[in-house]
Image 1 (cartoon, helix red, strand yellow):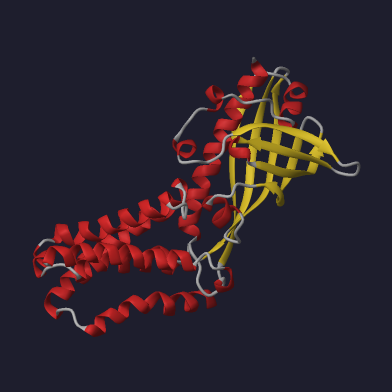
Image 2 (cartoon, rainbow, N blue to C red; image 1 turned 90 degrees about the vertical axis):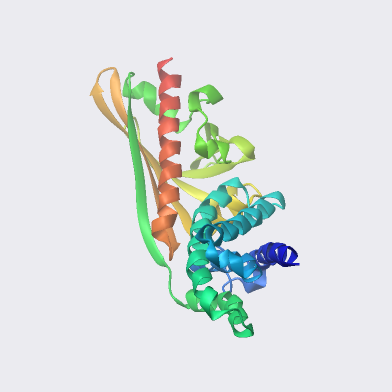
Length: 314
């Protein structure tokens, strides 16, 4: 019987997490309950992890290892189910997975040890209503808006006049040139090429990526053979119907600014190409959000510059 109630704790914990995850997708609750909030990222995983402890035999309190592993296992099963059902994709799991595991494991040990002496009573179950109280309070507090820039450079052994057209229109990039790293494995689209267009009044560029992902970029500033900047317009871009694009790229938490290329001549047949990307984060967890944003954009810039260099020099 004890074994059955122990398994029941895992099941209830998973259901509890799924309920709040599904609530976050209900449009008319937007502003009341949001995914990628402090409540969802830190409080809910801690509560999910308490279920297997509260429904376990008292012997679990004698093992700090179990107090850590039982909540972590519940979180792992919850994340797998969100992946299988399409609620999250692989990259989203990495974003929420790290704090989820930390919160569940640490709180499991702390509260599990506390509950050892207090014993479980009906009043303690009210703790599971905390997200309904904390998240609306959290939404009252304004987000912090911050601007960031990621910049990388590379030396290309060609003159500026040969390099510059390849910055406006990036030649086709094959898989071998771009490479396949961590972010590509977890589903971040890879660039294929980009083409310049004109609607009669304005020039714009479309960047083509894998997974039918397309970025619409209007020309903001252009100085022949020296500098060009593009303004990204997500409303005119073709995004994917995936959790990463829906909850992050199209959200107010992250906004692309400008992408720009600068050319600095070193000598007649050598120039330095500087690629920079400006973006804005608007959340209560900018430090953590920028950890991922900086890593992804930095990886993209390094791989793109390397690919451009290979295409131009060969």
